[in-house]
Image (cartoon, rainbow, N blue to C red; front, side, top):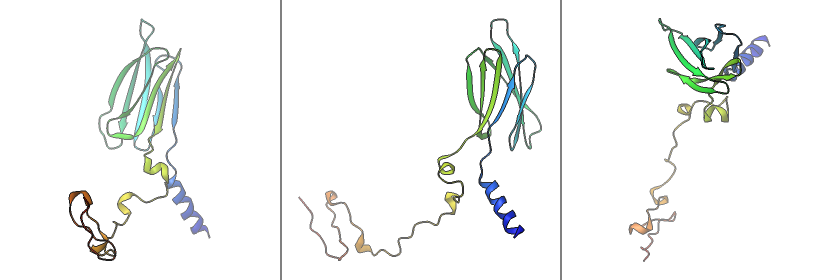
Length: 160
């Protein structure tokens, strides 16, 4: 009984997509961090003299030796959404509202995943088989002047 329950819990946890993460920065140089399955991101901002904020994000992916850095300018009301290079399965949004900068990570859901999270990948579907159909079942286009056959095997004349 316990083994069946554990197997069901494991199957359901694998089917549930990752949840969005959210981090707020309310003061300059106050760092906020977001961790996904294969990526750790730390962001902070520095006020500029002209009402803008210079927001810096530094991230390190699993298996990489050197962290990467990106800087953007945000004014009040600005928002930027993008995916990081090599990590197209997560969308990051940097948004500023007055004195607060919010960083959000959201998993990108493909149409296939949205249809059914428990469906197998498309490569696991068997290819269609046409072995049960006889050649007489196929029809050529009448406008090209080629003859066509019906299911009975009779040859039809070309239409004019």
